[in-house]
Image 1: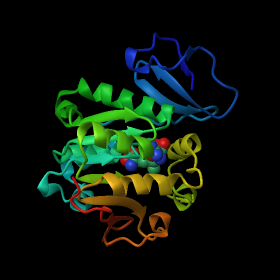
Image 2: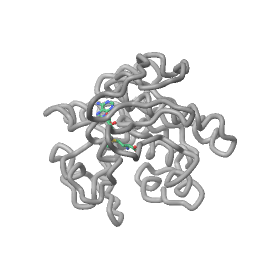
Image 3: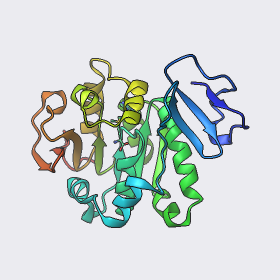
Image 4: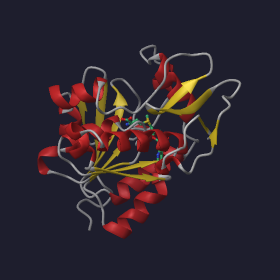
Length: 245
Ligand SMILES: C[S@@+](CC[C@H](N)C(=O)[O-])C[C@H]1O[C@@H](n2cnc3c(N)ncnc32)[C@H](O)[C@@H]1O
C-alpha cells in the first residue's frame, strides 16, 4: 500500500511507495510528524500504534494483563510467539510482563503500522525496555512458525488472535477500529486451520487462542481448558506432541 506523505519516509517504511495524493475513498496509510497512521477518506479519526499512551499505557502501569498472563502461564517465563500481531496490543502486554515475544504479521500495511509504533516506542525511555522484548517478523505465520522453529528452536507458547465474524460486527467496535477491520478483512476459508495446525506442531507447552467471551471455538475444536474474563476468553490447547523438542 502507498503511504500518503509530504515527508521523506524513514528506513523502516522504505518497502512502501510515498505519494502526495490521497485516494478517492476507503482507508489509506498516512505518514506525518506524529508517525504512521491508518486513516479513512472523509473521516477525522485515525488508528495508530502508540504504546506510550491510552490503553497500552494504562494496562502496563495499572495492570490489566492478568488474564492473558495466566493464559500463557507467565510466571514460568515462557517464550511466546504471537502469530497474529495486529496492532501489537497483546504482544505489548506480554512484553510488559517481562516475556520475550516473537511477533508475526502478514498484512504489509498492518506490519508497517506496528513497526512504526515499535520504532517510536524505542525512543521513549519508559517503554523502550518493554518493546526491546518484542521482535517483529513479516509474513504468513502458518509457514513462518515452522521455519523459525527449525532456525531458532520451538517456542513454549504460540498465541493466536485471528479475526472472526462476530468481532467485525460487534457494536462495541470503535469507529476507527472498523478501519482496521476493513484493512485486514476476514481470513480465507482454510487459513485459520493452517495456522492452528502449525501452532500445534511447534508449541512446546500450549497454544492460547483469544476469543470473545461467547465466541465459537477456533476451527470448532474444543480446548483443554479456558480462562474467562468479562468480555474475553482464552482457550488453551495442548501441543500435538507435548514438550516436544
Ligand atoms: C485480530 S488482529 C490481532 C490483534 C492483536 N492481537 C492485537 O493485540 O493488536 C489479527 C491480525 O493477525 C494477522 N494475521 C492473521 N493470520 C495471520 C497469519 N497466518 N500470519 C501472520 N499474521 C496473521 C492479521 O493480518 C491481523 O493483523
